[in-house]
Length: 285
Ligand code: PAF
Image 1 (cartoon, protein in one colour):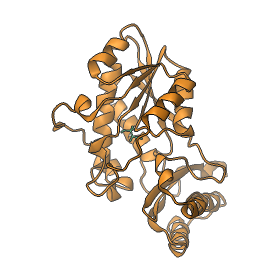
Image 2 (cartoon, protein in one colour):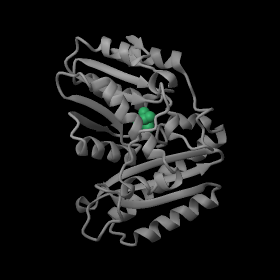
Image 3 (cartoon, helix red, strand yellow):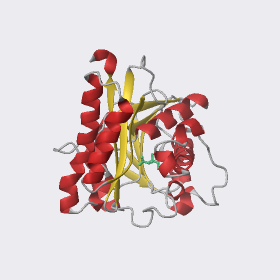
Image 4 (cartoon, helix red, strand yellow):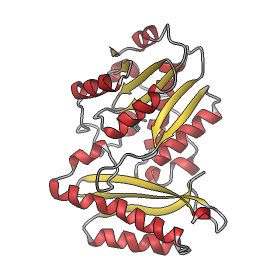
């Protein structure tokens, strides 16, 4: 695997490839990221990953400084999985001058849920993803392929909408969430959990599963179902930000007739903030 850190070297390394598949990450790779790489390897002639902890998407009180940086191990894992090229820029490489031009996604999609609790988060994400797409795909001879995990469902929708509205020649592939043995969604932030918290952490996916089961069994009082699980998490010592059932297409509250739904949740356990979601189709119940 070739490793480059500058945009010039990246473009040079891509000169002879016709179609790229791309997996953007912030590193500290786990099996979820590796499943994105596996999917990416199946299309295109060059599988590119990026590792960049993007300061634009962290709030002032968030974990930018302590976000786990494990470059050597990440490189080994990418190499083992058959990734061809790693783009690992420094902040100065990707933002040689302050990034004052930013991409602001539609507030109807970006200022709710994660965006409500992490103001500016999706502006940071959309800006860096657009920039990474420019770096990786700008000179591609054929349409590109980009891979995102469904675990960050709101991020995935925003990237899909961005690609669509800017007519980018990129297919966005959504890859199902990878889970640990007890259902906990894999995340780099799981590493912050103490042993005791790790045992408790499964309660979030269990809460989402209970809501999903109740909706599929015909439960119509979505707010009531979520409120019950929020209360249950609080009793167990969590600080929930939201648990809510939304439409998959636009994350708005569903009408009776909407069938493709997603239950999303975010909650803090000690100092760790976890998010998760589960898709459902109540037409098929
Ligand atoms: O999901 C992530 O790891 C990040 O938000 C991304 C897409 C790599 C942008 O920094």
